[in-house]
Length: 420
Ligand code: MN
Image 1 (cartoon, protein in one colour):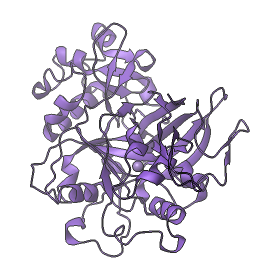
Image 2: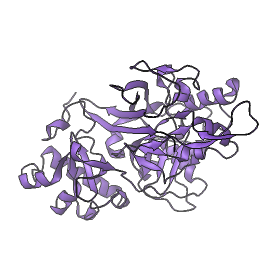
Image 3: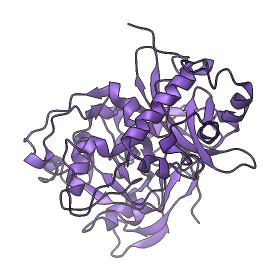
Image 4: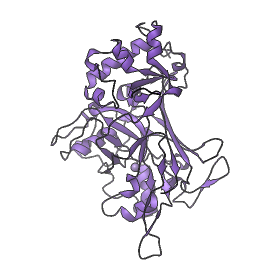
């Protein structure tokens, strides 16, 4: 084992921080009275890339793209500029290039304590698609909602199932959401009632951000798909289960999902995730040729969900799982998405689908953890949960474990406010 490369910013070298020198995730932040701009997280600090750019320390090709309210302009520059910027930042923050470390005035301008930064939605998202790629999750849901003996529909093992979601209601971590109202069909009634959701749930997901567009009519192969990905975020696909159950046949979820989707503020680049690629899960039957893949497209990312009721002293961890077990990979999702000729744009968000493992404590939704409310969870404060209550805060986190360092995503959290 060789010691990981370290930074002169000490907090980056604590083996537990998500924001090691090996990570360098991008986000958008502001400080009191100042405009939004692009930053990179390292340890407990945010590096102001606009300040470094103005000092002439970042690649010429990226000039002027960091004084922005989103990452889109930077992302649109393409892979060679992403890599060059990462190399420059690694040199500056390791001290191999002393231009930032040894310049006190620049350090004062460019380093902002994370505690003093407000984090914003990092990407302007033209389109949001949500997949359904965990076999365990699809099996659990199929057992509860349809047929325990035929939980997976025949198409599930052939198609990375997905639906086109709402980009307009994707919000950054920390944004509270109101419990949605909608149509709910009670079992013994002929017609639905209009009511506040009674089965409000979260879905533990990850999402990737498209970094390279594709042209209308031109499919992206599984081999080319990774080159179209800029990075990944944590994603909570909030779900109103009672509204969903009434509306989802025949065209899929609508109001039950469209009221809000939360993502983490830091986008971890595919380059930072490269050491954590793993073998793809076995697939049977063998997928159709356009879905076959040669590269390792699975990623080893440990994930957790915690729930903190209003007034509770601490959150209770209710789920531990891993992204690597997902049946359909992101490359297969993108190949399938574009195979009909549908184009993708810079900033598009692709949700993985709920990430569930094989054990009872690895399910990525309350629907599964409580068997549709039949077996409530007991939290650390003694309270019980079938579904979310007003005031509940749901906190998701995830990281890759390296040799003495972590490449982490921080958290995505959101609190439930009463229905309007
Ligand atoms: Mn979902």
